[in-house]
Image 1 (spheres, rainbow, N blue to C red):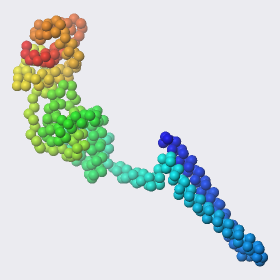
Image 2 (image 1 turned 60 degrees about the vertical axis):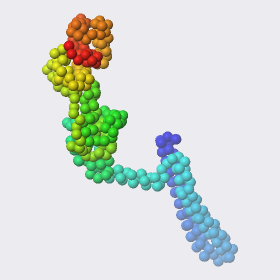
Image 3 (image 1 turned 90 degrees about the vertical axis):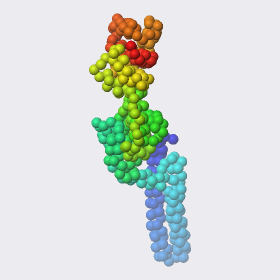
Image 4 (image 1 turned 120 degrees about the vertical axis):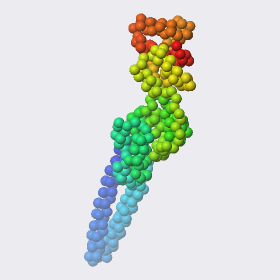
Length: 334
């Protein structure tokens, strides 16, 4: 039965029992008044037969009064609760519990909300300062602290679009341990993963920390893992530069000790700066395979540029695609 149907049926039960109770009350009052009348009549009777008749009427009146009381008690104490149970209506105890819950909710109106956290995060990024600042501000008492955790997690979902699986991924990566070391390891992982929204990833990390109960987040509690070439570092390296052999060679010379990570960072930077896609990179690789036997050199670079120019494509983006394809294929110098 739907909730609407239950509600309507409950109203009908309340009306019927209300009307019946009122009628029983009126009948009871009438019976009492009649009993008083019969009692006076019996007291004034001079004839023995009339006195017996009045006594019999009084007896039946008393029986009627007792019956009214009994029927009303059965109706209100047995029948009505039984009907409510059948239709799933809340019992009196449940209604009292609901009222108590409502009172508790009213007492918690001052607890931090998701909107409070969204407002708090305006102009901030998900980092340790913002995290500890929120919980330092809104973690007074057990109830408020629990509400602050819920508000933080839901705000991270609302602001950065994280999903439960993002939180699980971060939690798994750091083995559900939250300190400077695990935070920096997670940050390095995000920086070295092409196409990753770092703020979203850090939001997932701090949401996991909140759910774990790591409040505040420790600072200075571990040795940060040294960072290698990252997408962000490559983006900064490319500032004022264009993708060409000289720039490309310089990037890999500067990161000669970790060329694999440098290649990953380069591809990620090309995607971020020039909106290069995996489809564009794979198209370039197939074109080089078909026209230059898969060789990434100055000749194939020029050929790819001419092909894109002749077909009206963005030559600068095409150059970024070429060097991203070269890095993908493990060609680190021209």
